[in-house]
Amino acid sequence: VMGALAVILGITAALALWFASLIHHRPAVSFLWPDRKPSIRLLLLGAAVSAPITAIILFGYGWLQGEPLLFPVLDDRYPLMHRVSYALAAVAALFVAALAEEVLFRSLVLQATAAFTRRTLVICAINGVLFAAFHLYADPVVFASLAIAGALWAWVTLELGGIEFATGAHVAHNLCVVLLAEPFTLGWDTAP
Image (cartoon, rainbow, N blue to C red; front, side, top):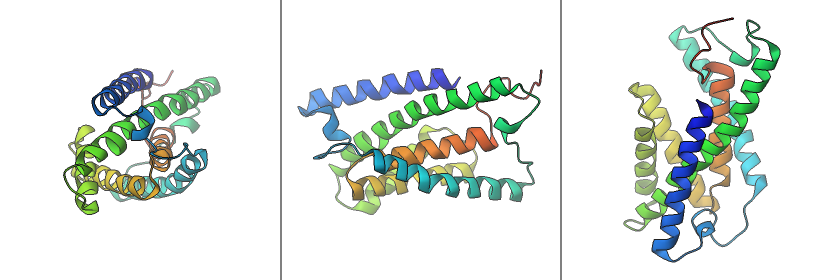
């Protein structure tokens, strides 16, 4: 499931970036980190900042809802190799999926919105709402948290001039969810 998601999102983002490059007669990288080289340091910093915040929010929200902590990767009902392969697949697939979403929202949508207004608050709010809507969650708390995260990641992208920090934060957020709280698989609840 994660692999299919990564492939679909990756292809969609690559095609959108390619078309934007053709339409605007600009190199594709100018949509991602204009006027500089990509920064692995910003990617890792985004992950390091996001992981503890996400974990606290997940566990706090779960505790308020009375939900048990699942810790999918620590569930000993499954063989260690299954849990390790799940974790490795999650890292690879969710990196691609998060990068694709960052290309779509924090580069292409962000720059398209900035063509109509220079007001940072408006740009970030539109980006956050569109990002949340893209995820199709009916739960208003989840929708609001995605909108806030999307708006914050848009603001950080504008401030830092590239998508690396937001990508790292997005990957860390997704990994915290699927490794610590809610498994991303169709058959996790049916123990062997």
